[in-house]
Image: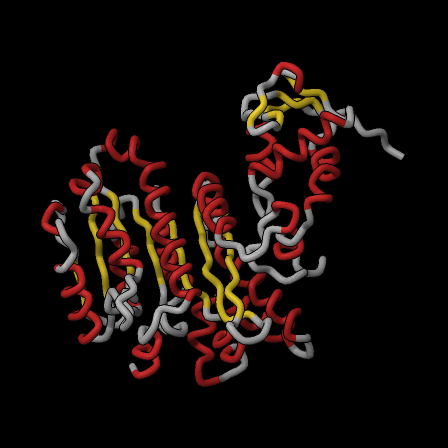
Length: 378
């Protein structure tokens, strides 16, 4: 309790960014599924099982308040949004209720926010597994790792329109993997078989290699339970260069991945050559996920010529087929295709001369067709 209280004593820049990423994704996600939700005449939900008191001691708003403040003024959300918040601390739950009730217009919501006070464990997992959930954004932000498990994520991710964002405390998980006292927690997080394999692989590795192995392991575990699209965002320690934690997004649909990728790109501290860093350190080919997510822009043009040799696709098809697991955003693909066209290495329809300019630059719209040459085998 003392540690979690300290967590909310002040809003660090990292906490602010984390809250903004989640809140921005919530609204983009809600807009993306809005039409289908209306057609199905259903509701949508935001669930946060480690919600905290709603505000930091300095008054800065955490995610529950950011989501609700905007919802009260939105006609769609007023009628359709259901929210469920939980914190095991009675004090935090009470403070959260107070913070929610202080939101101007909170009574505009048709569904009153629900606040629980309970531990997150097997009973909640069992409850979610037995329910058919409405489209839900599920945010899991424990202080450490207690309560976070693959089964918990799977219990929500199983239903249509459900995405998950969770806090992955790399620093504590790294220490916990070889600690027998918390062995069961680690097994629940990675799956017992993968956790044992991971412990064996970590022996003798340098810190950077160790980090990459751990992130690869959690990514593969999530993909095996149906979360095909996984995107981690790194937070470094305020002092030094080592990783403190990750914010990990997982979805069954490429649209959610694309939306979150754009949001996380905007919060990257560096974007060399316009390619967002997602705060990653350079990786090695031993870790395919992190290696691909650290590729420089120079690689993109050659990758496109190789991966799409002999094919004709629209710009949008190129982006959708290629972007998963890579750091490049849509503007990077448009720039690369423009460069390839100007060098005569691809054919575009309509060609550059028939496309408009924007800010002095020839555009490459989603519908433009791209023909890639056949590459001769050596």
